[in-house]
Image (cartoon, rainbow, N blue to C red; front, side):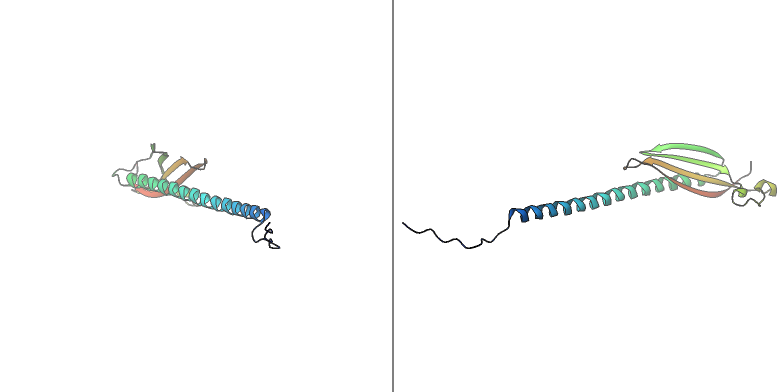
Length: 142
C-alpha cells in the first residue's frame, strides 16, 4: 500500500473568523457610504425645491410690478405643489424707524407700496417650507 502524502505543517488561507470580520467591516463601510449618498440626494432635492420656489416668488413680484396701476391687495394661487401669496400694502417708514413721520404727512404725489411674495410647499422631507421675497415700489396715492 502507498503511504499517505505528508501534509504541510500549516495550510495557507484565511480562517472563518478573519472572513467574517472582513464581511462585517465591508457591511459597515457600505452602510455609511449609502447614508452619505442618500443625504446628498435629499439635500440636492431640497435645494431644487428652494430654487423653484424662489423663481415662482420672483415671477409673481415681477408680474405685479410690471402693471401700470399698482394697487393694494392680496392674491394667491397654486403652481403645482407650491402655494403662492402676493400682498401689496402701503409702506409705513415708521416700521423701520419709530422717530420718522408717516409718508402721508408729507403730501407726496407718490407713495411706497411694500410688495411681498410668499411661496410655501411641503418638502420631500415632510416639513413645511416657505420662501418670502419683498420689495418696495412706487405707487400712486389714492
